[in-house]
Length: 412
Figure (tube, helix red, strand yellow):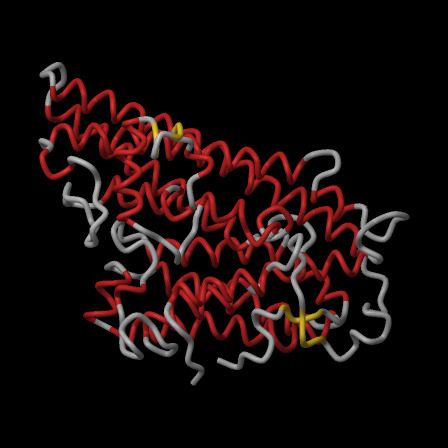
């Protein structure tokens, strides 16, 4: 068993391994044919594979994030209006409850879409040590106290005399994690335990606290949408990363061969190994060192307040399937088949489907299941591992691909 430090250290290791400098991932293991010009020897149309994954899978996934994050902002704004109207007696309890429920559902929808994006970390999501990614979602780095402090700072409009600007705030104080705390935390008390606490918060009424949190939530949601639009722009611009991938192998391209672009796209598949399998499942199970030592630790489960952890894993797996199969177009499975590896292609598809079915069958949250039925989570980890074992062996070997550093040397 490998031992790692708590999740924050795992996150730092993950981002460092996924991105260096301008976001280029590195590798330390390769398929046995990689040294043979770094390519397979058949006549498979790798350029068509790249084009379909870029245009048919990743681009619509990023664009959908921008759309659902816009809806999230609108629903949160509507919730704030309902909160104010309810406090003034202008709407009834039912209308207020519906507005709150719609806002929470918009977060779930946005998180589900983000978890698809999470698996497709490439280009702008890796650049500058994952800066854009972290602005939207900084897990596992988070600070509910930091969010509580910023609720008051935003309301006042300044921090130590400097105008408040959410764009300059650290990732742990904003993004989807901040919204989870603001929307789903049951208590209106602040979570700060040190000497620095939200100014005047303890003396405020619950109604005043709800308004302050709601208004900051709208600001956070607006920032998320701005960053989602920035992701789409950096990806789809005429000189964006999507174009760079599709221009692989041409004069002046940063990718010397089309196969190098294929390899870059394949790197994204291994999020399912280093993050979904290891950080989201193995770490809470205690297979890696965690916040509780090496025992089962619900504190390290993703999205615990909203109880959305297993749904995140399902979304990761669904995105993996889309990326692997090219959705309805040319995918890595077609490449394997062209290399006379039909059995490998089918095994990977079957393993992904089995993992999706397993994770989709949960009747309780991941946190509750860890407490009540640890074996079910161990089984889920095993189903995901069955996928990653195939990716780290027959997949890279057949297609002469490099194994990302995040997965190299990891046999867990």
